[in-house]
Image 1 (cartoon, helix red, strand yellow):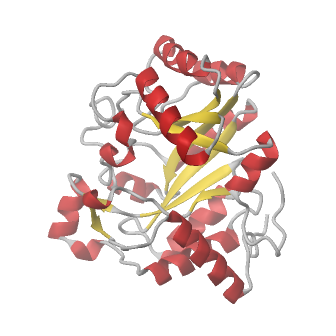
Image 2: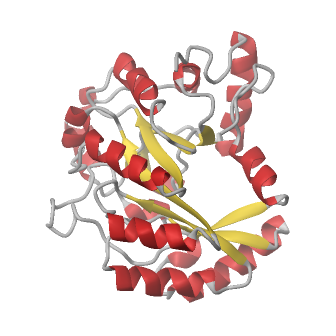
Amino acid sequence: MKTVEPKQRFNRYSDYLKRKFGQSIRKIPINAGFTCPNRDGSKGIGGCTYCNNVSFNPFYGQGEKSVLQQLEEGLRFYSKRYSADKFLAYFQAYTNTYAELKKLKETYSQVLDHPQIIGIVLGTRPDCVNEIMLDYFQELSRNYYIAIEYGIESSNNATLAAVNRCHSYEESIEAIEQTAKRGIEVGAHIILGLPGETKDMMLNTADRISRLPLNFLKIHQLQIIKQTMMAKQFKETPDMFTSFSPEEYIDLVIDFLERLNPGIIIERFISESPPKLIIYPRWKGLRTYDFVNLIEKRLDERNTFQGKLFTG
């Protein structure tokens, strides 16, 4: 992983893709129809308290469309929108390693057979991989680009329990290390603003994950989404949640970046759910690219950069 120089304020995912592939590469989101162990009763019920997976589904992924139907519709849409020729299939909704190996092979081989797909990115949980699965993905990585994204969300086990994650931070460490050991690129998700977490707790997560062999990181603000347990909690006990204005959140992200390993590539700064599903915060008119611009401006104003306070 490359080191960020002060003149480059943070380690950009778009720059990484251009370096690696030599051209513009886009992700095509696909819903493979998997479920989750804390939804089906094997570990819990109800899912994570903040989760409504409708917010992750592409518009063409609604209903009972097959993986290949979604792929073809996604290719038509993204090819026209971005004038791209090669793509990564991005399996984001639910837990995309939560099935028997035979099912995983059937799902992913049909996508990788498409001539415009050069690899897959899998969103999953750290408690839903095993050595046999990781060996399979390692084998795929010899011919395709393979990346696995783990939902860490927090390094605080009390927080993970409070939001019904049904796994521990130690399980995240184990999954990330076992994946990286096989040469598979590893990403992680972190949510800032989970109930009960202080600013110091959030920044301590930056210190902890900086010691892991991570390639990528997505930083998300907590969003209260309709039809979730958290929406009910927000209505009944709003004081359990920390509120951030856009300006406050930007400064929090920059504080987080300062303590983060400069070699970790930053893929996202915010979550962007469909507006009709968001209860709070409703940062109207601010899209992903707006936040990137605002963060860049604030980094310049503070004369700081990713890893400034990283101690190794």
